[in-house]
Length: 193
Image (cartoon, rainbow, N blue to C red; front, side, top):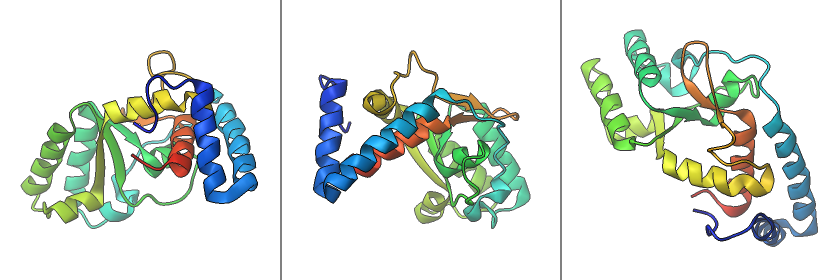
């Protein structure tokens, strides 16, 4: 975790300010406060339109066979995973940038890794650690929940009271844009876990 559990919202904010000051002086602290206000506003908004995540549109997935992509899409819909990063941003119309890979969060990251490896192997795709890492960046949801809890200083809400996810029309679970923005804000100032 980036911060201790006993830290209050104010002490977390002070830590972020100190970190920003060390990185860029008063201007960085001023920008931090602007970003916090933006994140609070984003946290209260709902995406206008959520589109499906198409693996064929993700840069590193374009080399996979269409049937492999279809199997992976079905897997992501059926498993307990949350999609984050630029793929989730793109599905919410926040960015037009083409994602390079997919950030996944699951309470069972090793199970998800094994499932994805099985699909790749069954379809004759490379399953080396390097090839796999190019496609997916998999984390535990416990890390995600801890970081969302810590983000209270920059936009508020805990996992239990503020639902940080939405579902695409085809059934994939993605992080809301406001949550993504707050997490990126914390990670840019305090460092990514």
